[in-house]
Length: 138
Image (tube, rainbow, N blue to C red):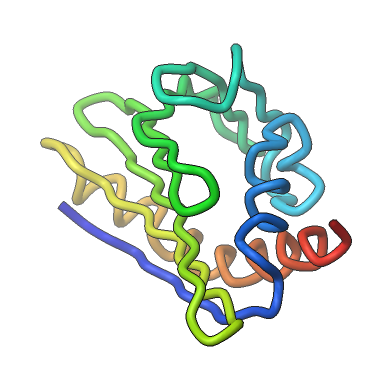
């Protein structure tokens, strides 16, 4: 198992951030490596979707945890591995702590971590800043 975790503090509220997170069809407006993001139903546990990153095949996704406005967990299966993406907000002293965690599990976890880890570490801080800009407009 390999984990990449990024946390930032913001003045955006959890509700503002949640508004952006549940708008799956528009994730590509703040995640610029994402060509397509779609969800096949309401933003709730059990709903499936699809992510298509540039130069990658589409990934089928599943929402495995949704607790508005605190947390959502999305999983994607890869050959002999799975990626678990956890998004959380925590409000402390009128500041919101936002954490994005990407976890790779399975037999080929090390391979995928080597292949994707450096890119994820580099792009997540930029994506979060873009997402927070959108959130503050709500």
